Image (cartoon, rainbow, N blue to C red):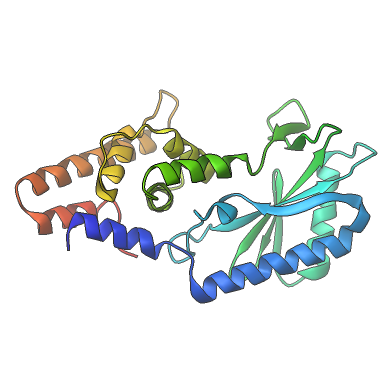
Length: 262
């Protein structure tokens, strides 16, 4: 097997399929129905967003942290604080999922089911249709604006413009990230990859090489993360050297140090 075929096969294995996909979709439909029934007229809208809707969510065999982001937009005429809305979501989860793990991870309420985790995000919408979610706990304001599904089009357009390599590339780099202590949030990583400039790449392997070469850090980055990024660049450089020396088996062994088999 070549480096090219190995990377393509691995990226393909990271896709959620069959029984796992069906269970997740069923859970999303169920929680949607239950949220609508529980909160009723107190909501403006509620929907899944994030990597689940973008098709870049990893199978749990690859990433035990895989989750579905679900936004619950409250009408909130009394300007309730984010914590109050989070408490409402906790009570909802306690009613329908009492046997599951339920915990707060600001600014979300986490619901851990057997096969998937939900991140329930409380939100509100103003008269102009702008959506706000709870600000980070370190912020001086209660709410911050967001556009939960605007990134989807950006990623889809980039994927279409680059031979449908971008989404497999995102999944592969998210797999690398979860193997390296999750130093980058999934959204930040996806956004960075979508912003990278690709112009000479002709196959999936070259997109992977280019992305690793484009990874960066700054003075405030954790030392371990800097070490891991530098190590990834060295592995790619050595893989290229082995390929140039007509040693495909050795090159494949080298790239597996960066992207180990599932």
